[in-house]
Image 1 (cartoon, one colour):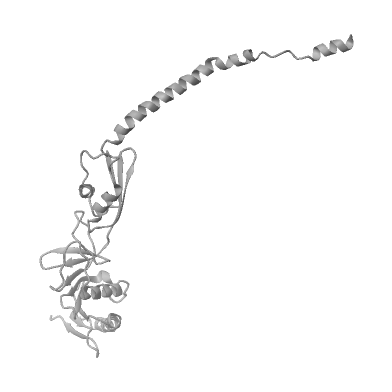
Image 2: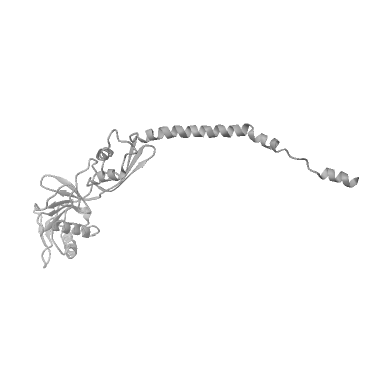
Length: 268
């Protein structure tokens, strides 16, 4: 009797599987189906509206890196049509259009969301003015001729004058021997303690064999010729030390002579 009663208590009650599945079909189950249905409706709406959205024209154009060129001029050069869609924009083609501007050294164009266009540019760095008979240009370190920008700045740059044989046009790269000599002389003067480049107002190379610089504020003309610039700078250093002791105003210094330095005083 004892064994029989223990066996009865150890037996487990049978489980009704249908009763366990019933809670799954309650409120949570219905809520899940509602969310799935809403998601499907939303995806359907987005699928219908997205093509129409992407075919809209760009709403914003963001320019980065322009210090001299204006945003208005760059947007004009992009030549965007009023009916051109954002999806139809070709960044490569737009980059080629901007590269036609001599001021632009590097450019990167890309689409951005929502409906935007980003333009990143690197402009050329002017190192001197270039004076012709009737016009003033800017010249960059790679000898590209640039027109004066709309955004005018106070540049402390020397004015270079070249001979008539050098054709100067905006957007061209000059390769004349006289200009190469001028740029080499400027490089020597960049960190010169005797005659720093910042003290030069003009560099006259109209005679390629006689490059002459004019200093500021005294306006002294210093004739360098066309070669041996380092040696002639050393001669200039000794000559200036002697002339400072004499306290005489100088009209010009000629460094081309092997025997020494020829100078002319200003008549009092």
